[in-house]
Image (tube, rainbow, N blue to C red; front, top):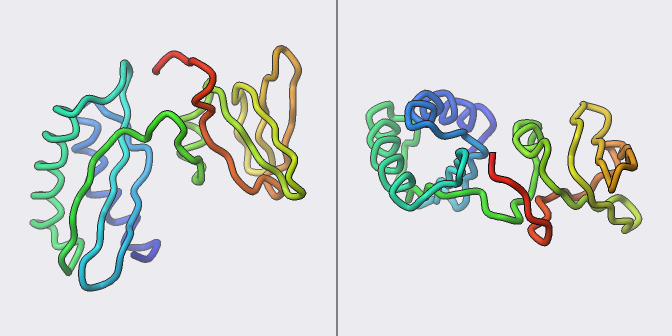
Length: 153
């Protein structure tokens, strides 16, 4: 799936996700042209349940088929982003604001703390009251820190 098709999929499903009271966290494509897997990650205050995923899966699956956005066979998976979800896109970092994260930098250094700011040039963490600024160009991986309890928002 190229960026244009990914954007088209997001544009088609985002209104339905919002109608269900959910937030679209990420859309991911795995596989090849013969049969792929479209994964849609959603969240909501209090967490996402299996019933939420089932209802949304049926509705957006029908919508994607009707819109003809994907022109070959695929399986659709709708789920929660998980407690240790990797953060890649700006939307995911915005979603993670206020939550504990772990970030790895070029050279292997690891930082953790509550994500307090997301900017194109930096991420800012609060580590026990200390402000830690991480230049985005040297952050090699970032994910939610499942070892620290956090309120679902």
